[in-house]
Image (tube, rainbow, N blue to C red; front, side):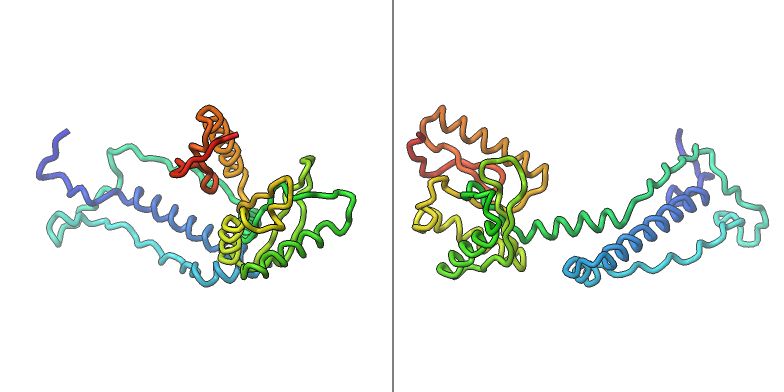
Length: 251
């Protein structure tokens, strides 16, 4: 269909379509404000402070104006009402699915905790020792102190059926966690207290379930490819892998 001089400019839309958009934006504004309030009220101090500082409360939208009943393209004194309907089929917006803002706040708090945790794998574990967490914390606090690294504040074992339950170390901030992780990888092949452990502990950040699945797949691929190449052709990099610029014999 071609346009004619009698057609209104394309930047104008039917009032009903504009009102649908207005109602949708108003609903989304309300949801954002509810989510912000739920996070701030959730009791997670760090998360609440971060959200309160970075996400301002959105003001309510001004009341929608009434539609123009006079044709803006006709004469100024024209009294012919403007048809606010349109020949274009009306698109009915899908209903907004209700969300549980408290659940979202809880999930956000979990992610914030993960961002400040290190997971130590293959660390010797005595399930019958009620003081295992205290021993682990003391070991890594001493390790951190001797290498001028941020020290963990808490330690606990993740309950599972693995021979060595994953050890989770909690830090004050994600920066402290990152510095500790970098330092651990730097000293793991030279620090005697780590080298003396037969199971060869390794460290990583605390991962979400999708990230953990990616990590497992990457480790499997690296192992299989290195075994075929008989050298450390690939090495792990966080949860993925990369080519090793200095491969060594792979046994």
